[in-house]
Image (tube, rainbow, N blue to C red; front, side, top):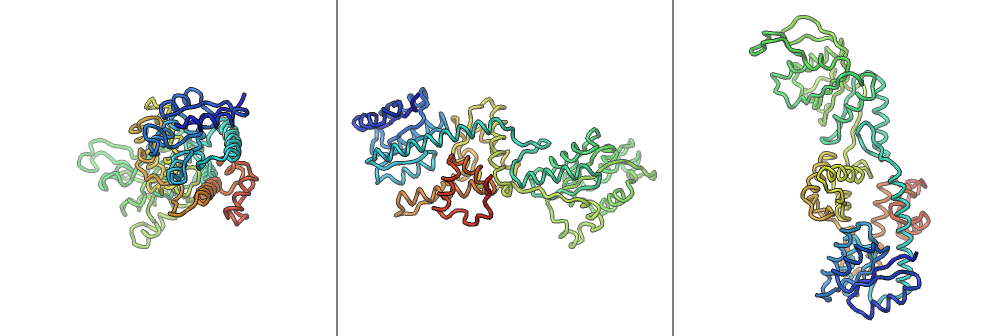
Length: 459
């Protein structure tokens, strides 16, 4: 079967001329306005669409064409749409590329250039389909409910496995929202204690006068209101793991008592005299600088060294490479299913905004933004505004920039971002960009990307 092409133009002569030029190699569909274009696009799903920005009822205004582009991408966000524009409309054409168009051509269109671009577009489409099939056949790397494929994240997973095989205390360091409790739970589930309890407590969430009793328990009559004997979390977690989040918030007297437990595996309940021995592993976490707290006299150095037998740093999301898009899509899939909106996808501007955002709240912030966007988004596409992120264009084009220069700026930035996401791996970056490895190398040389080839790998 011939590849299909949809031509959208309000000029009947241009539609007819282009159709006859392409009909030997393509099955051609025609549309004269936005409404008809969206109808034909939805019913035929053409391989490539040629879209004139100037459509009725306002052929001298690009808004109708840009709306048609948005409508078609809402039907299929992977669609290959080539925008046709006049020289005076080059900024609109660049805007269209930023909104998801594949490429643009200037009027009058040279037929040889159009045919070459169509062949290139179809080649990219074939590569994308192969890549999509490959991705669908592979399951995301999930380690103990934690998701991540970047080399940085895989190193953390490997370290957690090693730590889990031991019984020593561990200290998890990382910014808020990086998943410290999930990492602690992973250590527990991978250890010999996996059949025992996993008990978590946030040391900053319990008033100081109650924290000692919460951790160590109390005897009947130990203080006002202590009507019965009560076990603490150290006893409750015996045979398993006790996770102490925000360990830097422990008051000094409790630090002393916890240090003694780590040294001897013994403690006394509040108001008690009997020594109690339990088999509980401690995993602690903090986003504070404990070494600075030691210098300031707010945290015991001996306790720090007892807790930090093994230290694991949980990476902020901005240091996890391509994981940010992987996690975003996973959250979208999860929450869209919950809300009965399984057809939701990210618009191109949303994906760019996700990559550019610094994510100070890390995975928790990403999760919350995607969940809110699933609820608030209208239509089938989530845009940057739905995520409450700035919509960042793929490049800023200065006044006087030619179309060729603008295209090269866009290509250079896309290649740099793809190489960054895939840690310099040429094969993976080329697959994401929808081009061959030789083509990627050629573009890198042309655009001056990746001059330090020592940082570039073939696979």
